[in-house]
Image (cartoon, rainbow, N blue to C red):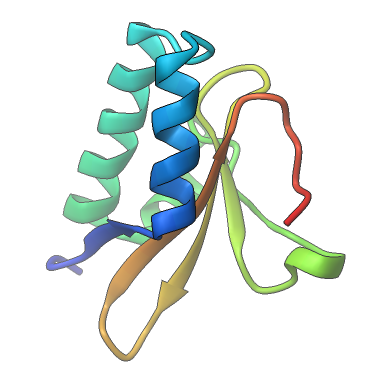
Length: 101
């Protein structure tokens, strides 16, 4: 399926800005994040979920519903799929494998 669109929630965008500002995320991390966005928009969430590269999985407990993809050893992209709009909405970007809301 094509036509997917990755959209960041305001909170995730603010967190990513802070991670960049304090150099917690590297340029290599940004390249990987952009690759994830590119693959998500081109191939969709089923491709990402089945790819061995992203270690994508469903989340549980307070994060039941969203999914997580890895962009580094500890870095995660937490996202949800809005089927009605065919939008992948990034809910959170974390560098420390922290899933707290």
